[in-house]
Length: 397
Ligand SMILES: Nc1ncnc2c1ncn2[C@@H]1O[C@H](COP(=O)(O)OP(=O)(O)OP(=O)(O)O)[C@@H](O)[C@H]1O
Ligand SMILES: [Mg+2]
Image 1 (spheres, rainbow, N blue to C red):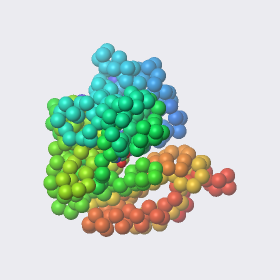
Image 2: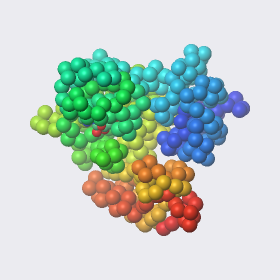
Image 3: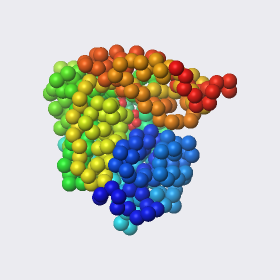
Image 4: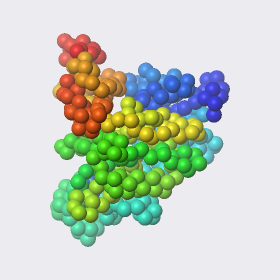
């Protein structure tokens, strides 16, 4: 597509979901002068102020989904929890949705996802299906076992570790996985084009807040400076590309992997996010093509760009702290005074403790320098709910 060939009243791109991933996608679409329409249930969603057309509606509502898809040349999603039947119905009638909703149907169900990767011969934890409360399945699987809800989990919600048949279980259809002794977690971004060609970014390390299961840091570096050993990086790239190919996906995909402790250092596939991924935010500041630009290129049928990383980079998620309430940002000026730092705020109106409110990326000449700068800058910024006496939505230095 030329970028300017949609009829009046129509949009080049539709996005199901209006969160920060959609917002960063719109920022890239602006560079190509593309018109974007968005559907999200929250009238104050991060995309609301940036989209050319923002429809407030449920991502479960077939009528709202049809209205968006039918107004857009190409539609994508930025969140997995959408009504796939409604999306598939439009595709059957000729609408263009990328990736194909069949990809999402597999990814939404952790059992279907594990099955697809096992069929493709990809290494992962031992696993089995776990119908709700089926004690004999659990006992036969052995302990400790990681229980994961098949549908609906995110940010570690829907994941728990069972030590005996008496451990409190999550309600609902699930899978069991062996508990991996994880040395560290990796993510690999893979972009796949309409013709099946792939561009793979260098693997990055993800670090988590263990209490909240939220990713706090992403550490990225060119291969010669990477903290990830070359043979691990090579294996991670191989698995990630094969996983996205096994899904027949088009777009950008965040592939999450574990490196197992011990002498074997096995690389195991955890899961695939069929959309831009938190682990790829650093690409905006550190790579030739950001994950958002790459996603646009892939879903619009444009040539994929280079995934080259120009500098070590560390991304830190900026989470809401303190009391919930109208958002207040403190310490922005001090954070921006740290060399190599950029701050990305998502425009969420309300701060909630633990909610992703923004992120910052620090570049450095080494990963260690980038990490030190990122931590120094992050320590300056506080995003929290403002009390009635504080200015609404205000930034203070
Ligand atoms: N088999 C396992 N062994 C050990 N730890 C695991 C295992 N599976 C998951 N975990 C831990 O739990 C975290 C969340 O698991 P997973 O990514 O499968 O769930 P999720 O709810 O989809 O999370 P998110 O949305 O944050 O990606 C992982 O990042 C990892 O730290
Ligand atoms: Mg995960």
